Amino acid sequence: MNSAVVRNIRDELKRNADEATRISGLRFFKEEVRIYGIKSAGVRKIAKRYYKEVTTADKAEIFRLCEELWRSGYMEESFIACEWSYLMRKDYEREDFPVFERWVTMYVTNWASCDTLCNHSVGAFIEMYPEYIKELKRWALSENRWVRRASAVSLIIPAKAGKFLADIFEIADILLTDRDDLVQKGYGWMLKAASHAHEREVFDYVMKNKETMPRTALRYAIEKMPKELKAATMERGAANGRRLLFT
Image (cartoon, rainbow, N blue to C red):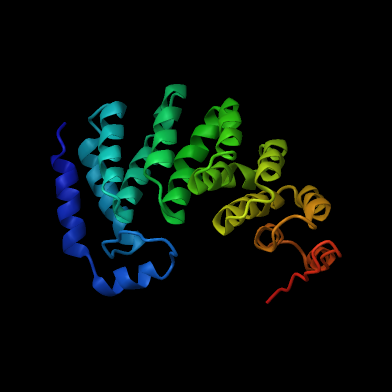
């Protein structure tokens, strides 16, 4: 299979691009991003329609097409690559991990692409092959902010199902004092997801670390907890003299 399908996708994305949508989308990012200007629902429709054209190809070829989409730097193309890779999840093998790691390391440049890839494709891979959680802990030590965020958001879906709690706390420990706000939001989100099934354990973790946990991460972690548990975390100690406020 050649890259004609990718060219056709790009032509369709350009035809459907809307300048008002593009400008509106840019407001969600502090970093520079490349956007055609198509709403997520429209991108998913395009992804699913063109996926029917590539299903006869083997996984390696589909991954190659995904990488071609990633290389463009356009967010909508990255979403299509994420959709295609997730649709192949039943065929994941252990040997696929370096592919996902390369995409995270080389092509992810914003939180939306990071979360779309990691919540679904990487998360599904980890559920199939949980021994690779050790690689997420290695990601948490990366100098690349997106790789660090990926280490946490890859566990969002398993965390909601009550899985991997000890590993979630270990990754949170590594990221605990990270100074990047998007990494803080990522691991705070991971803790919030874990609180669905392990509310008391996550609350105890937050209480133990609230003096050093950045406010952003703490707010995310306790967002879904009952008011009385939130209230117990509101007072910050004398170590930093700050109060956590809820709006």
